[in-house]
Image 1 (tube, rainbow, N blue to C red):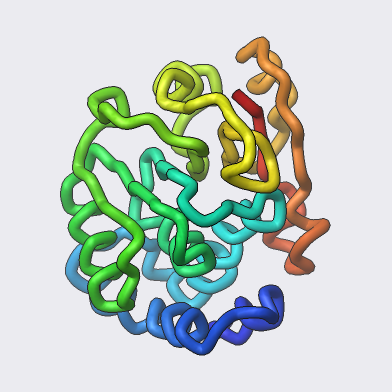
Image 2: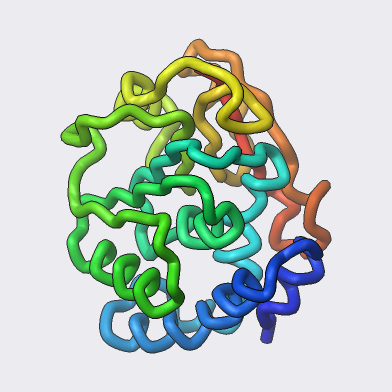
Length: 210
């Protein structure tokens, strides 16, 4: 079983508060998952590897600056936004999902873990009026569809992160055709270069600037 030590080993500069929040996630998600199943029960012992650390791969590609606005589209149980909100406490996160029970879990997790910089919203992203600096997500749909949903929500700009404003998307497998179909310029980062476990061998962060 993986513990929060996995996160501490890969992100050695965490504050005591952040360490406490990451440690709390296991029990908090276990409690919520017993009521509303958002994480496969057979996978739960790998929560810190397959969900928390996987989410934090985005932070190895792009550091968000204080005041940045980040939306997690199709957030499910809160990945990648919940771990990222802990890592970047001065960044404003919105987690959006069209399935209300998933948003209930995200809200409950944030309340229990003391995460105050994340707002969970039960909506389709098309209905969200605000604009954002970055869009993050994890394998919600094919890239062309996803870009159609979110491109208009991203403000052009720099200075809100270590990369210009844009999309940061977690996805696995051979993405060549799927990315080409968007007719946009993507950068691809192999997560196996950041984290050692074989789980990450085919996993990538893909990025496109606005």
